[in-house]
Structures are given as C-alpha cells and as structure tokens.
Length: 125
Image 1: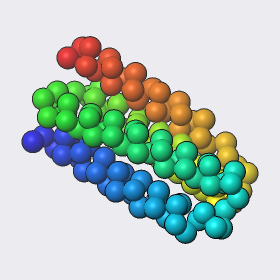
Image 2: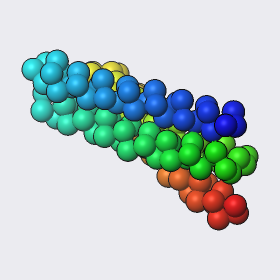
Image 3: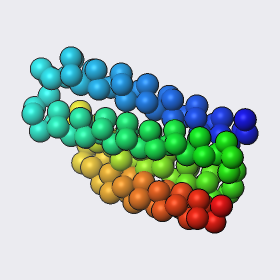
Image 4: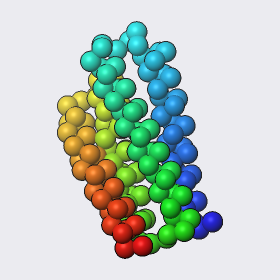
C-alpha cells in the first residue's frame, strides 16, 4: 500500500468516526441545548462531513492503484473543505463569533474544487 493511499484512508476513517460521534452527540446531548435552527446547522455539518469522508475513502481506494500529484491535491482540497465547511458550521451552531460564519463558502469551494481535481486526476489516469 502506498503512503498516499494509507494516509488518505486513515484520514477518511478518522473523519467518519468523528462524524458518527458528533452525530450521536447532536442527537442525544445537543437536542435539548440548541435551538431547532442551530441543531439543523449542526446536522448539516455532520452530513457533509460524512458524505465527503466517504468520498475521501473512495479516493484512498483509488490511490491504491493511481498515485499522482493531482490525486494528492484532490484529497488535500477535500480535507480542507471538510474542515472549513463542517468545522465552521459546528462552531457556528454552538454560537461562535460572526467571522466564523464566513468560512463555510470557502469550504464549499474547496470541496467542489477537490472533486473536480479528482475527476481530472482519474481522467488523466
């Protein structure tokens, strides 16, 4: 197994475990502490983290046979997107200061760019 594949798969596993834990915390502990709007934002963060971590898992599987700079860039962009998008949404739902609310769009752009770079990496083979 290449170092790239191992790293991507490890990060994907950690992000999926974290999404599961945070989803459970949201359902059991935060439901009574957050407003319905705040809880919806928190649940959106969990959902996007889980979906994109599953995608990152797929990237790691592809990296077992294709190890290119573009694939590494794609994985890095998706990881950055998860941190900026979901991370900022988690913080915003818990009452973070207003400047944090400006980060999710940057995370979304990083996610979209990462998936486009991934597609290009596969296309180039």
